[in-house]
Length: 390
Image 1 (spheres, helix red, strand yellow):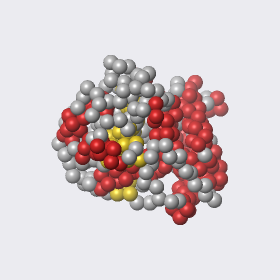
Image 2 (image 1 turned 30 degrees about the horizontal axis):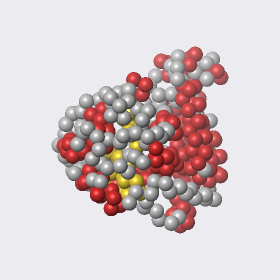
Image 3 (image 1 turned 120 degrees about the vertical axis):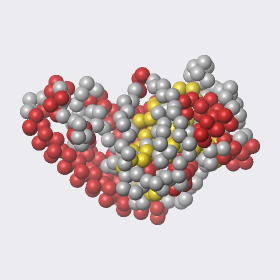
Image 4 (image 1 turned 90 degrees about the vertical axis):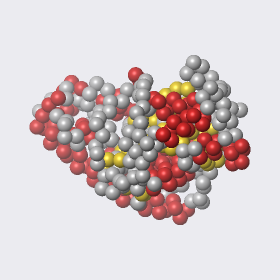
């Protein structure tokens, strides 16, 4: 069966400041799906981004790979949250594409941008869980080219810009030559990392390794049908209880606030559907600096110097807050903010013990999606002075 799994737009932009080796800068055309319009702001010169585009093959036999993506998303985010680069901020952005599905438009090359670069981890999780598979034609060169041209890649080469594409059909299929797409990526300082779902030698023979070599990216072969094993620890129940308290610190606002608050609970449930241990991984992600919801949560919004509580429409607040004055709201937000930070610190402290427990009880496995992504990101990050310290 044809199975290209392109995690092309999981763009993880991490605000980090570091000294980096750079390649040539160029401009990109950014075309966005109106349903997922992302408003961008001027980049802080004291930040470095990690942008990850995941290109997922959603043809028939890719169910196992998509399951790995769903099950391993939060552990990947957690590992990336340890990124360091001097004294600068880190910002994580993930973009997602699907390709190779008969349900997609043939005029677009059986390719769909699921999400442009986004920091909204709940939205990324939602879209991952909504993916379904169907037979189709998998065009690697085409989907790489599309992600390069559509996404809002950072122009400064100090940032870490990565494409991950996974599948198991020949890399040479389709109307766009993969060599041309890879050369374009190289000129724009974007690394292509290829993940072949199958035998290592077969991936080399079908040009998956060459597609990565052109941009000095990583080639990996994985067993995409291997079930993700989540290890339970003595700290899980405490972290899950803290997650419930953490959820109580969110104060929605705006015309979509209530809906986004429900989405948060829905993604807690999706993580829990794989295992309690996976729900713990998500709780840890929610205690990290990557989990921010300033578009609908007053606590995160208030951290922005430009935010004014006076501009928030009272009718778009929770019922018990509508009658409060602006002074009372500011006091309430400050109290909830303090409570959240205390809960997040407790989760992070417990997670250090959890990570150590898992390390001592897990067999090393380099043949899954999580290992392929993290190994490539860390190796290429070192070239731009990124480091990962727990």
